[in-house]
Length: 352
Ligand code: SF4
Image (tube, rainbow, N blue to C red; front, side, top):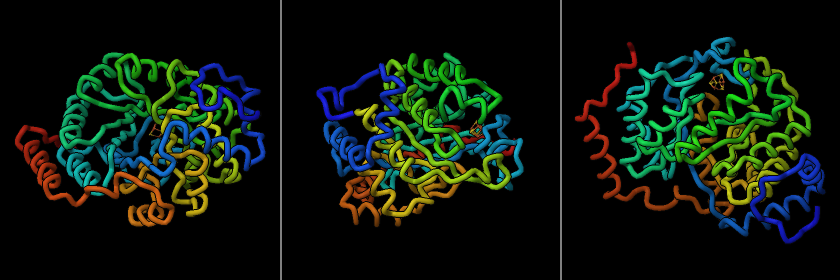
């Protein structure tokens, strides 16, 4: 594929042949094209920063082959019941202080139960009050649950498609691709932004990587955020010994995602701690413009904040983390918001 008038336009009719052709471009041409598209819609030197907190860890009934949080695998993961609202708000305040713009909260559930919803809603409201954008990942949602989260002010809902429809059954058997798509529909219908991407390095083939991006890009509306994860191999999971994916294939996946979903934030997500600075820099060149930092990325390690700051400085990348995070007025407002919540019956006894 060469440069043409439609480069950088938003399309929803990608064919597998077209996507494969992008993946097969010479590496330099692909990166150049992805960077050109990126510059049409974004500041090429800005990266959006989110912090992700696991609000309920492990003991998940699902069987996702890559996931240490599944109760089916023996991974030595320390499980944790749903965190108390107050503790979540304190973590959010720390994230804001460190410069995050968005606070993402993840719970290892097949789906939230009705009894959890009041606490979840208080978490959303409390984090919103701090002036942070909110994102949650809680598993499958019914229409009513999606609406309740939207009404509480949730900005983004994360629900990854993981891989192509064809390969999905090799990775997860406890729910279907259709289930995933239905939840995305419910999230959209409730008016929330969608965060949806996938994982590469699961043992999928090149067509599956194309199929994942094609499914995402051919949704009626592109997800606003597209996390691209590299498999983190965890001992005890079925994919612990999976062969490494060629790192250039990962960078190509970022570049193709950027070209196909030109206005979406493409997020460099799990697996970043195993990438050296040069590889991360190449991912930014390929069009990644969002990262998680700080808190552990759900249950796998994430490069610490200082390393991120240093890398951004070396690359001349601007992020929200570099401005205003020591503002005393802002700090006071955050502390006040946490205190106010303490007096509003927001405690949840996570031990019951
Ligand atoms: S990926 Fe999510 S749904 Fe799958 S096992 Fe892990 S926590 Fe459960």
